[in-house]
Image (cartoon, rainbow, N blue to C red; front, side, top):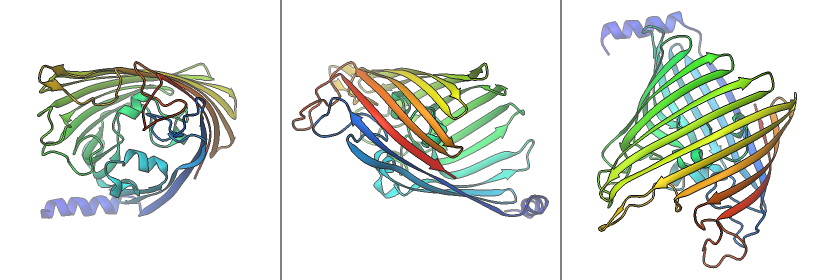
Amino acid sequence: MTLAAAALFAGSLAASDSPSLTVGGYVEAYYALHLERPSNDVIAHRDFDDRSDTFALSSAVLHADAKMGRAFARLALQYGTAARSYYAAEPNFRPVQEAYAGYTAPIGRGLRVDAGLFLSPLGLEGLAVKDEWNWSRSNVWTGLPTYHVGARAAYPITDHDDLLVAVYNGWNQAIDANREKSFTVSYTHEIGARARTGAMYFAGVERPSGAPEGRAFRQLLDAYVAFGVGDRVDAKVYTDVGIEPNAFGLSGWAAGALYTRVRIMPWLFAAWRGDLFFEKVAEDRAGRAAPIFWPASWVSSETLTLDARPHENVSVRLEYRHDLAASSIYFAGQVHGGATNARTQDTMTLGATAWF
């Protein structure tokens, strides 16, 4: 660090707030029932609510946010079946949900840079149920990555416009599976008090080194709009499309989701979500690429959720969900040798989450 840079850093600390530490957390638990009652009690192709006929602790999270002047850091520790699910390929990272540190440079309106382990910015949904309208996650969010390791830079262009650029190891890769990095550019705009829109471009080589698909440069573009209608209704529209030219041809996908939520009473909400996810897998005489997302050419779901909030930091939800796919990828009835045997599955879930 040069003397000028050191002086700027020291001055920024002196002019800013005193050090602070904020601690929070949440707990999520549920009981789900697969209405077709498969003998293995597995709800197939679901993210964090994949066990039937059992009480499950999906997440217990404790997080701390520290700030000293313009420097900041976040550490979120976790335990539960959710971490087991999305860290299946990297079990050593299961206890850590997020861990990063950064600095807000006194440039223009404030350039925020940080590096570490982040939850993915892709999609309209997130990891914590308390921030979502439904209990389960859509197929669109389930298919997209959950976490990244890398570095980011965010800049507020105006009071209503934000720009984010980032470089990551890749999709769900704490340890890079190849020698190439992925990058993203995203833009968000606040239209009003209850309306916003945004778009993101994400690109990189995601297949591991030596994969039969070769150096497959994957690209996606997602976009959304969220808005309120009157005092009681909110809605969101989300779409995601992508391509991956590889050694067998062109793989790609197109996906979308619609969300609505109605405030029936100050403490009671009803939410509906529908999603559809198409995937094309490249194939030629030499062979077939491995699917990026699903073992079926398309999957869809429809979800209805009642959300009761007896306290401002407590949510109890009752949810019905119907899943439908192009081929038999779900379990139903007697399961032999892990074989799937149904194009549909229906589930009921009772879940509760509390946070502080």
